[in-house]
Image 1: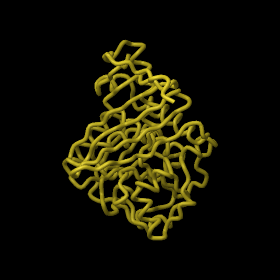
Image 2 (image 1 turned 90 degrees about the horizontal axis):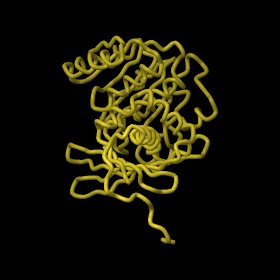
Image 3 (image 1 turned 45 degrees about the horizontal axis):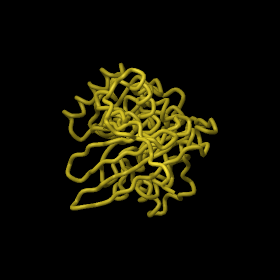
Image 4 (image 1 turned 90 degrees about the vertical axis):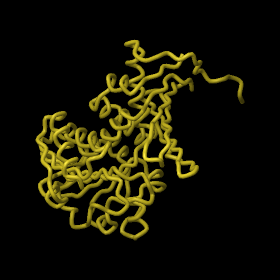
Length: 324
């Protein structure tokens, strides 16, 4: 039988700590070459886009896919989880899980590359995905101060209050990006900006930057000239980044970035590499990978089965045989 899990089910089954563990496993497997991603593909109709991405995770013995439609100002995410035999085991609502895994990847990049004494994180953007970005990086680094910048002051204040309550950190809003990042060792952008919000002047020594808002080849959160300042640049999946990572694509087109210089976070984790020079400037550019969903969904599905959570659908998920 196929188990169906709602958003409420997922929220009760896994949290950010689980996401950090699961996404670390997915990234390490990717770096070892035992797991992989099916980069996002899009099919368009009347201004809408059907988005599909997937991934496998060897350590979870699972494969998965996420499907959603965008373009009308709203989206609903659906996830499918398959076991190592190819049987569909779980259908789940994937909005919350997607928030958790996206934030977790940024947190992992910070724990790998941010200065050891990180105490302050800055975030630019206060939208739907920004909350778990801030919470995950605070959790992964142990930072106790969050600096917040958002275009809407009222929304930024509400965001800061919510993150402070959830994380226990002190959260302060600022009127400009310059002020927000001045004291931060980690800087996160989580925006839907078409044109850059972070400029070359904002790239400072001894900082780790996380650019997590763009999986659209037409959007860029950072001006191309800024990439001349970075000592190390990694992404989640280079193939996907070359297709949809607008921030990197625009820099490559401008000649300020060579794709050969862009590494993958999973490779660093597989090799056990961490930040070296305390004054180095590092960046993680995230588009989101299907293996992250798969890894975290596998944890949720296992717990759901153990606890009897969810609804068993009258569907046989086993693959049909003799189809060669």
